Length: 250
Image 1 (cartoon, rainbow, N blue to C red):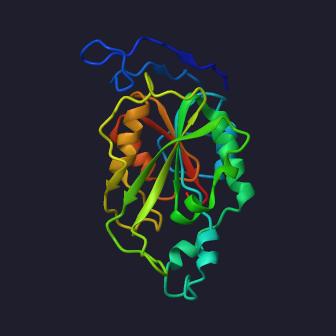
Image 2: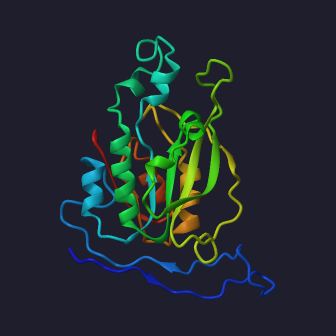
């Protein structure tokens, strides 16, 4: 395996009137070429621990990572009483990550991302409100945006019923949008209904594909180390990107 350093082509971004603008549609950031070890085959469903997969990826080579951690914290705190019996049985049967495991994943993601690369972190309302910054303390990652996904169906809740999840947008330093983010019509509230027959944590393919287009080039590698339903693989292929991802269940 060869280790490549990230390459950048920095130009002046302009809008249609020739004025410097953060809303330019060009993307200057170029991901480096690199070789994958034989253990990591792109564009298939790999069965392995995502932390091991991240160790195989050369440092500073990936422009985009999606991460949907499996955590039970919200279920324990809400204590509905019938969770796992009548409600959310498939979700409860998933192997849950503790806080140390999530931090291990984020450390590996931080290492794999190119400078100014993006992590799209799926999170629920409980963790969003309780402060999840401890997951990326000590990394080069910083929150730069937030997208609310309106799932179009009613979920649980003692008071208000949950209809949304959240995609936190983090960027590895140096933080910049100009020359990196090239699609500017993605709303921060996204409505997309998905089924849950494939996986209880199925994510919106169209939203993920739009985000992939915004911050990567065709042919780039998109990584998901805890892939679940492998919706990110589907999203990457829709946009002519390559996918590297795995799940413990394959």
